[in-house]
Image 1 (cartoon, rainbow over the protein chains, first blue to last red):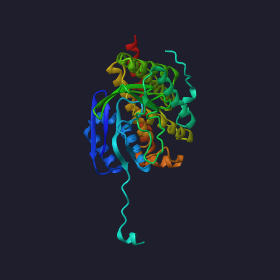
Image 2: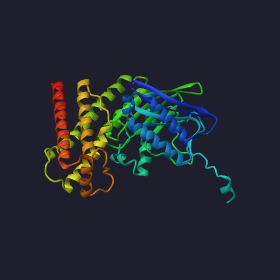
Image 3: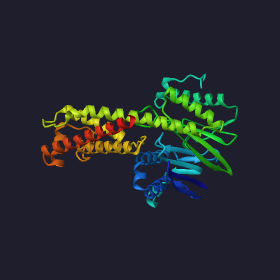
Image 4: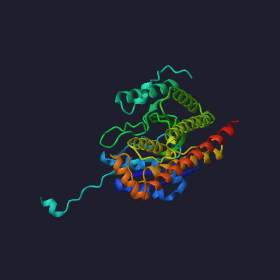
Length: 114
Length: 274
């Protein structure tokens, strides 16, 4: 099972988008969760986290370039807060399994022959 | 608390110097070991699946104790517009066990380290909430003071340009480039002051700074990070403002509003202090 969540946190806010699926959780799925979370927020809460969301998206892209994040021991999860040092922030968590990997490149039949 | 571990001014280079990063991690490991005899377990995963370590200070160090308490220390490089210190708590359920986590986000300064160490001691004794709140208030005020200094610096740098009617020169462009960097750094920071009125006045100054930036970047048409000649800039003034007069008028109007709002902020702030 691949599980995790992206959360908008703050003194008066706790909103999240979770995932729990057997299928692989791709980079695009992660970015999609971030986008859905943005849409849930009031403009004021979103504005306070503009940099946080940008940094979170940048991290997901960077993770994809490095084969993603894999949590094998649930007692050692993955967690980052964006931006650093801000209570009004975006938390990215992977609780179990793999996340933010690149989709495999599917070759068409002509390319396979080559 | 007096700790026997040496804080190093070089910790500020932790993002540039791999050896310093390791020393900084060891510092926190040793400090926490000196505070408690509890077994220290690994806590936050800090590498990508290809094995590359995520050495970005987010977190710099983390630990979980057998008592199901955990500590996460996040470190940012020194910066006058980002928060110097913030602390919060998280709670997690892992395999039917509840983990209570203390998060400390800081910049590397000796006094901040000492306060963070005291907070960890108090957390492990279950008596830390009041101290944590006091530290958050104290460092929020310090961060605000630093931000005000940055704004003061910006205003002092650019206010001499008010009523600018002369031909733009290369020096102006150079100043705009620097100004743009300062404003970009501060524009997305949100500050809470002791009273809502000061917060509102501060927000107004930031909003006016962004308006000024909009004029300087010719309604966001100019990317100061890219190479740009004075000739190209002047050409873009005509594109965005039709003529130089409109541009100068816009610039002066934004600058007047900025200075007025900044003086208003200073006035409200000094009234509150009295």
